[in-house]
Length: 178
View (cartoon, rainbow, N blue to C red):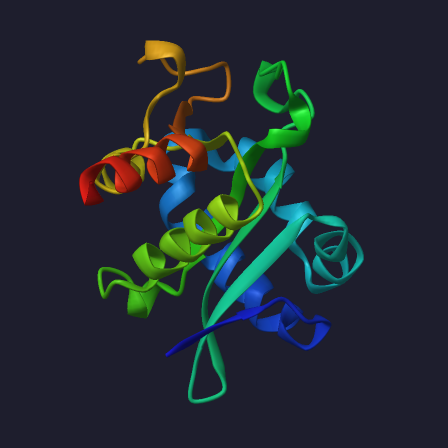
């Protein structure tokens, strides 16, 4: 398996993965009306139109097939989060793994790739909206309740975050080598 950056040729498979997850898993937490509203944003055409506008989008590919997707974008007030330094605050969106390939480490690899990329670009904080289904998955990857708030928002999601601070990590490494 390899993780690649989004290209339009992946849109059809991404749409199929996202929609199957929405109508199989997400529907349990949010109901059909909400899923129908969300799903219209993830047709092949909508993905081709909107995903290139995201800051960065990755896909996990194996033997030429898309197995999963995850994107990173600027926070920009999403989910009611107002960032003091919005240029250093990002949000992970649209994390979905093909139903037949879940629990095989693919989603974990995508989130780790996004975390590495976030560090490379100097992100201070990365947020992720988590459903009840995904909450523990993200917590195991180091994401905690944003500002200590463990309540669900109006959309039934938890907002989690992870802080990055390259300078502190570098200083700690330098100190440990002395």
